[in-house]
View 1 (spheres, rainbow, N blue to C red):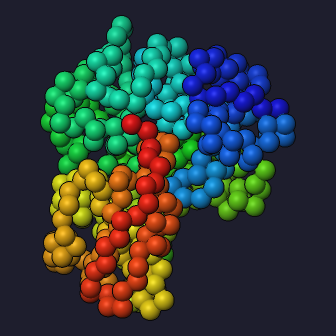
View 2 (cartoon, rainbow, N blue to C red):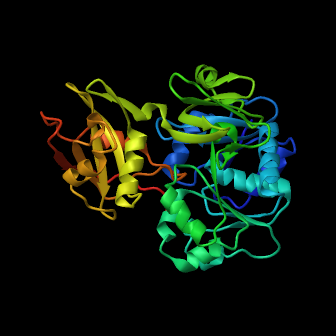
View 3 (cartoon, rainbow, N blue to C red):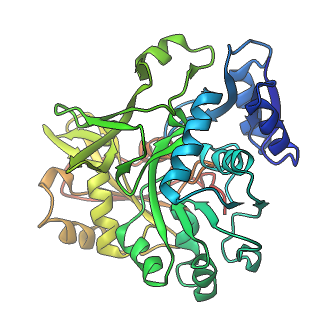
Length: 393
């Protein structure tokens, strides 16, 4: 049976070490009470999970209800070995992410398996305690939201530059944001993966050792074949068969492109909506808006529309830029088809985030569904949405 341990429990590293030695598998519970209760309802800790299981972790991706992802000991060990090979060996790790997310969990697992020092700090990268201590190499794993919040803090950038490598994953990061830190001497490595692959298995677009990437020419869906693949979703055999389509083969919900063996992630399959008979890539529109406005504190979503199929909605926040809808449409007009131009604005206090730092696109779509309809797709409506829950700071 599973051994439930809270993500903020100081005994979690010891429990993980025991599980990796063949002991009782660990279910990592979110620290936040409501999220923990939702996961426990899905988990049913008394139900056996099978042999060779090390950890069960919660995931919902960027949409949907929690799922319990079963990670074999062999997959966790393969992930640690592949990361160490790419980074040049084991080292000490600093944890600033929730251990209930796969990115945070893998920081703990790497430290446990590699034998390096482990520090657990807050998610605030402006904390002076972030500076590496003791013998190196020193590694850190973060999400783009954390970088965004200290982009204008030279002291924080200098501390990050003392790490041998800073892994950045969990969500798409704008090139401009990454370049600002790299110009400050921070050795950033972008990662792509998911809970179902023990976190990142593609670094800077290149698969780790033993990982194969393929892209379906029909819909650009990414499939990962990897020794780090999960064993299935606990108590969800039908969903497992949809995603785990062969030995070690994970059918993702992401779209991508391969250029000379290098993967570029374009967005999610469900980021593509049909508006007026035209396919609109919401992820691409969002990237263009963020680049044009020089800010990640904006987003693009869509809502159903009886006449057009879907309407593109621009999401602005209180602490982000405040352009008019007409300004954004003019900025985008030379670069996208007319159907991709936002026709409505949703204003929120902050962008809703999931615990791992990803944008909560399900919450955005739900909020956008409340935007009043307009009869002409070239006109605009502006609505102030509800205060949505914010992710970690």
